[in-house]
Image (tube, rainbow, N blue to C red; front, side, top):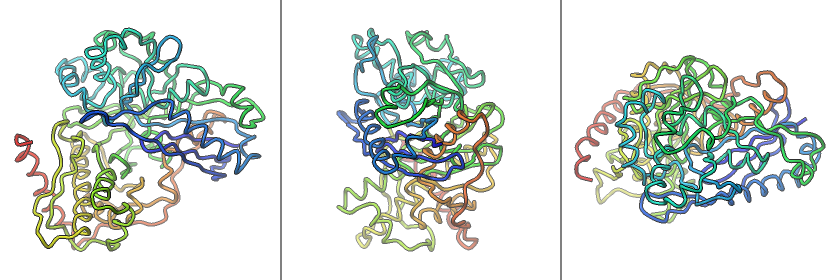
Length: 481
């Protein structure tokens, strides 16, 4: 038997095929492009997601046809908050508005000023959430809004293609600003406020529950020998939490992906929206999680790499494995605004303290440090919300840089565990949920740790002082940008 995890990321789709003991049988990926037709806008064509899914399945079929023939369940993970709008014939009405699109900042502020949203969802209404995007569509594209039959999150549009059903899971739906996060159900009150109803929402299941069956024609196309269930899956961060075994109180991970995430598992729903910490349903029944989110992490390094004409990996490779202290340059990673703790879609990034002698390596170091300080802000917010974090798994593409991880260890003053194959966390989590759904039993457990990077006791105090300096910059520039 085999089990497939599909992780729909912003920059690409990853596929991970495993057996029932979670041994990796094969993996594949396909790139995705993001369109930015106006400042602050970020969109993708859902047809590209289906093309990418066909691509990765064809790769797996070519590489491991026998293993793919034994497929029994598929788990889905995907970037959250996207507004995928379809009509009564399942046709996409407009490009999907992505999580890092900030056009709906005015609509989000108006919603957040209404007490029902924080009281029911347990969260601030951020501009990137789905609900304010729908309000933007209602105001600016009324013809599109009038034709909406279903609102689907990105991974659930893939599910529609795979199964023909409108289904979502609790963890992904918690990022819409329409879910009662404590009760794990749609809020009729909040949907009505947006001119929508439950009939336009997908049916909800838990992450390990069956969420449709693979269409027989697709199974036949890929040489699959029997029926295949598609489980609920999870939003990318919840799926990554499953992949890293982050399920119990005290478990946590930090992700250096396109965005940056510091996530802690919770065994109860204890929202603290005033901290700008997200409180969402976990992909596991009876669990929740809290996380601080920064909108640009490895995206900052990608931005710098494009400006200096080098590859991001080459920039990272030019740095030593360990930092020797804070940089004299301060970098603010607010390239697309910021969520935790500022909830500010208008703030923008910058460098402070530049000297004519500084070179590309100095800028790279400052960028990594600025991202680490922003995640340090998230740790402060999580601690104030009651989350306990003793150590962190470090995952995501940025975690391949030991310098970056060591900087994080010093800023957060926490041990950083580097798991084997950490970059496949969400895809592995989706595959684990598929195993749970097919076999009716748990498939968790902590990953094997390849390396642990400890805070440098001689540098922690220096980074704490540098972080305080960093924290003073935002209020000083807020009114200037």
